[in-house]
Image (cartoon, rainbow, N blue to C red):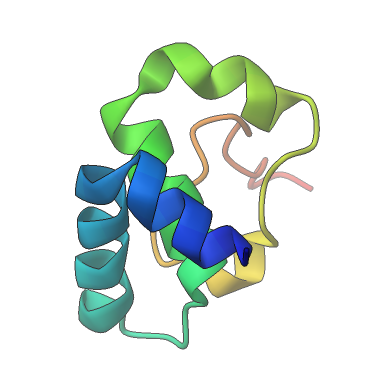
Length: 75
């Protein structure tokens, strides 16, 4: 069974929110990235998984990554 199908079966609300995030995104956003963003927005207690490397590239995201500090403007 594919990962997207597992996610839809096990967490249908997060999957629906991911589809909405994907459609509303100004940049091209993969379903996987949108699903992870939706999960982190609505289940912040799972942030530990994101801190251990389970995150998408920051370039694809149109929302700031809460696990990373903002860039230092002084360089």
